[in-house]
Structure formats: C-alpha cells, structure tokens
Length: 110
Length: 115
Image (cartoon, rainbow over all chains, first blue to last red; front, side, top):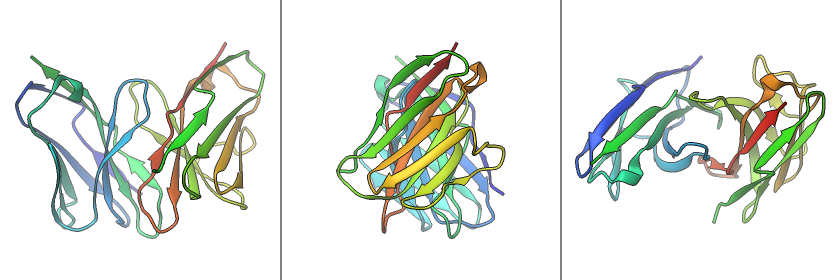
C-alpha cells in the first residue's frame, strides 16, 4: 500500500520562504507530484520529480530523495495568493494512479 | 494545451435520483481518465480508473453498481451516481492522462449536493 504524510497546516509571512515536507512509503515508485488546490477548486499541477534532486520552476522548487522516501516543496517570495492547500501525490510502480496525501493548508499572512 | 472540463460544475438533486457528470479532455486524447472524490477538508480519494473502451477499475470500497463509469471515447468519460443519497454529497473531480505522459490534468470539479 501507500502511505503519505505531510503537515496539516503551516503559516508563513508574505515575502518569506516556506518549505512543505512530504514523506512516503510505497510499494513502488513512479514519480512524485506536488499540486496546489484553492478551496472549492480542482488541483493545479506544480511539479513532478522522478529522479533525486531539486527541480526549480520560478518561485517554486521541489526536491526528492528516493532513498529516504522524502520530498519537499519550497515556495519563495511568498504572496498572499499562495494561501492554499498543497498536495503531495505519489505514483506507484507500473501504474499511473496517484495516491494523495491529506494536504498542507498554507496561510500567508501580511 | 491539456485542458480538462467537467459538466456540470454544481448540481443539487433529490435523494434517490441519478446524476451524470461528464469529463472531457478538450485538446488532447486521454488514454486514461481518473475519478476522485473529495470530502470537506479531506484529500482526494481515487474512486476508479477508466481506459477508453474497457471497463473501469474501481478502488476498494467503491461500489461499481452505484458509481457507473463509461469511457466512451478518448476525450469523454462519464460518472453516473445512481440512487444518490445525502452521504454521496461531495466534490467529484476527474483527471485525464495522455499517452506517453505521467502527469494528470484535472478538471474543475463538480459539487454534488443530495438533499
């Protein structure tokens, strides 16, 4: 089976940097995704990691360590609009199905 | 590219009726479509996976006779909630994957309220 853990809530200040961690235990691994979801809306894709290391995309970066079953999403220069839930999702080996973590609700304060 | 639409965006129905939700990939052919359900303050839970032209694969605990899935073409999948009950009220989200890719593109979701 799959088990994905991430913090339930985080608060950070506008303009700051925040790191959202995700740990996973899976029976296989075919990649890790990060999605952003605003309340009442569908998730939007942020990043995809399948190899170890850091993937940078503008203000958002994502890191993966497969040996540790660990990933983080790094958000820089936080803006108020970044207040949302951030979902970590893992794709199992030989499958394109995604198992989602419960999400981390990020609140950006002035 | 890679836009997925859902219709309707919001539906309210009486208990015992059936509701059909459509999921369309607008600018690509979707090899696989996925249906998720999300209750308030919960994460997305995969209900079923459907491939065009074949029967859907349901996750454990999801009743296939209650949640009918039809993947009629490479751009359309439908989810029918039969004999809906108040406990079926939820946010239903579909996603689509195109051949050769790993990423899932999500639709905007359908908010179902059963009275």
